[in-house]
Image (spheres, rainbow, N blue to C red):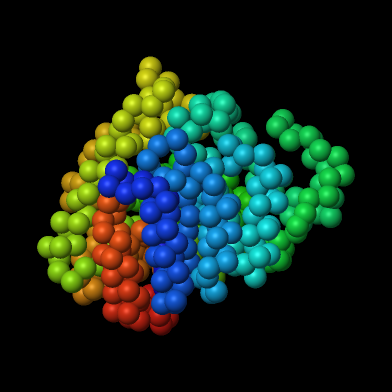
Length: 360
């Protein structure tokens, strides 16, 4: 199996923003030293939900402070960016890291982020689809000529080019929406399942649907293991692990359910209930989020507990066809020492059991 550490650097009320960022980089450095495969960084803005609005500068810091760990984005919200700038920034991270970039992309889901940047969320999907095309061409063609709805350039020399050839691996955050899964498969992009876009715990079904679509398009995929975002936290006792985990739900409910300028922060739907094109599957998402704690409704169990419990739950995850998992290893507001302990216990006491051949 492959394992990764994930952070959006949530800004808990008990900590300063510099402290939050400093602790995040220290956790990533430890993961690198202990042989964890990847770090995944998530872009967010305009709330305490996440501090990585400057995701490229933070990724550059990670590149300079680590040696082996692959540096992934989970995700860059493409509709909020000029795709030519994304191609440049991503290629720069790939070059300075020695070819360690995984570019994870998504169409975004927080309306207040679109409103803050001045981008109409109703154009999110078409911006996303065009941006993917622009980025791939900017990376692989000597000079970029593109005439689309949002990008119009002629004979543009986009530099630097990425170190990995033909380009860094692409990953797309998807939910249960058939259209997003179809787009990823059609364009040979690995999916990222789980996390905020998979409240119902349907990551194995999402990944299987992607594999089925890859078969339909005639794209090889058996050698690929799309990642799943999953809560991971290891502690000496089960009681401590579960008690510490309670703050994640408290923080998420407090931040994502709060009201922004035009609706709940964690939703694309506005105060009047209007659903942007392509986000129809979000219509009942808040109800689903509220049901997430129902043990019979949560899919695969969270990877939270003692090393023994986490290992057993990982075996169930692997049996469901998932061989690639990343998570945060801690919770907003948790003492930094406990997060470092969680990373170390996982790397030393859990990870070695899963470094052989995957379950068929």
